[in-house]
Image 1 (cartoon, one colour):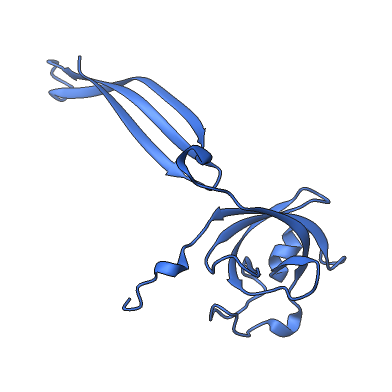
Image 2 (cartoon, one colour; image 1 turned 90 degrees about the vertical axis):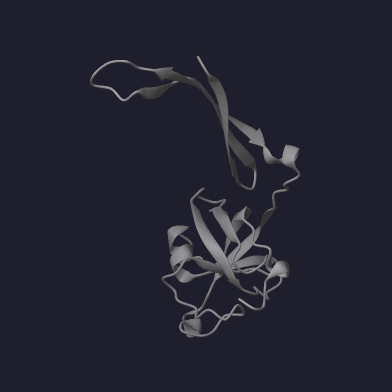
Length: 164
């Protein structure tokens, strides 16, 4: 019996998922099976806090608003064209391309959006969402709601190769 431990790491903002498997390689002599096969004897899945690996999460709470209709089709700070139907948002400091989960604290509904613009520039607000994202969070009528922002995938724009 040959025993191997396999590791699969998947990094997220808060956790790293790992899987360890012990595999048995056997020589099979039957007519209907290949000359070798392997069997997973033990598989263990667990979650490791990413803080152990030096990865820090970003969580922010405050007020969210959404883009007015007049911005449809206009260019955002990242150069993308704003569309109400896309799950995008404006944030003052997060890098463009960063994916965040925005949770409406009033009804606990969440949406994932990509940061592609700067703003909001209204005191007390931390994020401006596309109209479709605001609709999923169910605050179109109110216009503004209390939210929690959690970074899911942060993009490092400082090391971009300008030749690409």
